Length: 126
Image (cartoon, rainbow, N blue to C red):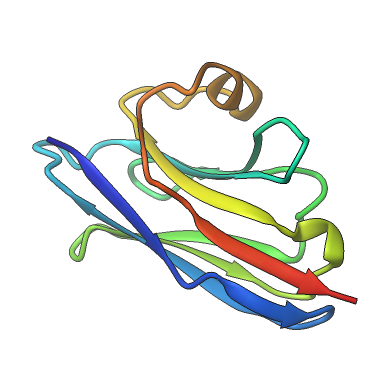
């Protein structure tokens, strides 16, 4: 059974940084596309960033480009999201997900495809 466990969330002031981690276990094949999503209260879940199995391809939502960096450590089965220059609009529950297919972020978010973690809360105050 695949398990994804997020950590690293918290409260920070605008302009600050946080680093989210996602520990992955139970995958028999590490060749999974992985991604981060977020959902703010009253809003739909949206894709933040995705990374290909070999880490050669990364893709970001326009709202986080230049501020967030997704990375993965295959040896330690860990996915990370470095978040800099945080804004109040970044406040949300953040989720990691894994899938055998690298879906377009919008499709992945809308259909909740693959395996998902339980989320970690990020709160950015102004």
